[in-house]
Each structure stands twice: as C-alpha cells, then as structure tokens.
Image 1 (tube, rainbow, N blue to C red):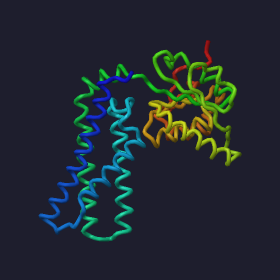
Image 2 (cartoon, rainbow, N blue to C red; image 1 turned 30 degrees about the horizontal axis):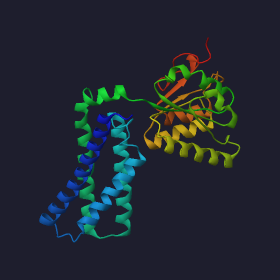
Image 3 (tube, rainbow, N blue to C red; image 1 turned 60 degrees about the vertical axis):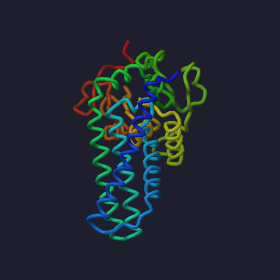
Image 4 (spheres, one colour; image 1 turned 45 degrees about the vertical axis):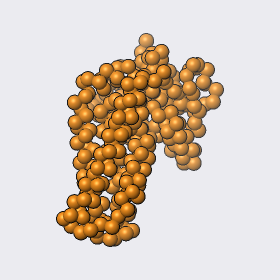
Amino acid sequence: MKNNTSIYLRFFFLVCDIILINTALLVCNYLLNKYYTPLYLNLYSCISASVIIWLLSTNLFSLYTEQTVVKNNAVFRSTSRSIVVYLFIFSIYSFLFTNTVNIVFLLSYYFVLASGLLLSRLLSRVFENSVIARLNNNEKVNVLAIASIGGHWVQLLRLMPLFNLSTNQVTFVSTWENVDNMVEGHKYHAVPDANRHNKFNLLKCGWAIFAIIISSRPQIIITTGAAPGLFGVLAGRLLGIKTVWIDSIANVEKLSLSGYIAIKLADRVYTQWEHLSNRKVVFAGNILEE
C-alpha cells in the first residue's frame, strides 16, 4: 500500500510547479506588453503548450515518482533535464519562426522559468532534514541489477545479500532465458547478448535495456558488466537514475573497456583490485571473497 503522505507530497509538488511555470509565462507577457511591444499571443494555447512540455519531460525524467520526489538531488537532476528540453524546443521554434517579438518573449520566459524552478529546488532543501528525510527512510528502493551471463552474472548474484531483498524491490536482467530460477521471487528479463563485434545485436540489446528501464523505473541501476550493463549505465545517465558499475574481478591488470567508458557515465565505479583504484574508481573489496 502506498504511503499517503508521499502521494500528497507528489501532488503538492506537481501543482506548485504548474502554478510556477504559468506564473512565469503571465509575468513575461505582462512585462513585455507594458515595457517592450504588444504581444498578440493566445495565452491559453501558450499555457497549454508549456504545461504539456513540462509534464512530458518530467515524466520522462521520473520527477514525480515515489522514489525520486523525496530526494532533493534526484529532483534537481530531473528539473535540470526538463529545463534543457524547454531550451531545445524553444531553440527549434525560434529557428523556424524568426519573429523578433516572439523570440524576445521566449528568451524572457525561459530565463524567468529556469530561474524560478531552480530557486524553488534550492529552497526545497529546507525540507531535506524534516518531512522529506522521514519519507525517504520509509520508501522501498527499486533496484535494477544487470549482468551478462557467465562470470558477470555469478558476481552479480554474489551481491544479492546487499540488495536487502526482503525490503527492496529488485529486478534482474541477463542474457539467458533459463536463469530466472536463480532469482526466484523476483522479476527477471532476458535481453540479447552482444559485444562490440556484433553491431546489430548491440542495437537490439541497447533497445531492450532501455525499454526495461522505462517500464520498471528503477531508483538505482547496479551492474557487473558487460555490454548490457553499460547500456544500463548510459540509460540511467540520460534518465537521471543513480548508477553503480562494478568491474569484473577478471580484469586484474587494467579496467575493462566498458569500465573505462563507465567512468564517464556512472555515479560510482568500483574495481575489485586495490592497485586499480584511483580518485574515480573505488576499491571496497572482492565480490568472490569467502
């Protein structure tokens, strides 16, 4: 059963955000009409378009989910990505319709909108140690665990005690159909196996991973590699989801190629060999240690 307080909080944030973006639009329209030049805009259409853009972008970046709305860092990341979506759409519009008045209006609206949203996110940190912190303690964590079959999969399974399977929701992903019995009681998805030598399978694998992430909406993605895990880290980066990459124990002398890429994408990268650790790569022990 969902936490009622969390539902009310999500609805409250949504309503406040919609009021804020509409207020920004009306203020810009008023100021430009008074101090610059009359704007012949259909305000109802503008408001509708702006709200639709906001709702679609925040849904894509999971702003109002139970897992993210109670975490200030996740809210800030999602909001920043939605602001970028506005900039992208406004830029296309300005390029296609080079009316100077409309461009001035869009620039003004974008500046006020972005400033207002970011300011509201900074002010929301006042709640970080009160209501939001208490809600966060009661939330289940939705984890997506990804690994190719073989050694990567074995190492992922060795992490299962850390997932707190009794209290968190964990979905597993690998490249074989018949290993779901190894994670009985949890959701399991099989994706096409792939490597850099088979470009078509890479595309199929990437698409499958992205679709799983969109449907399952994890709060954190954990992977021990290889290609499926890297696609998971990439999708997580794009969608504002926390990601953890654990490089395989087989990579003794240097990180894997995927591991080097993961350094630029993942929130945290781990190695299982202390001599490979540095300021970007963390050593915290060996998964296969007894």
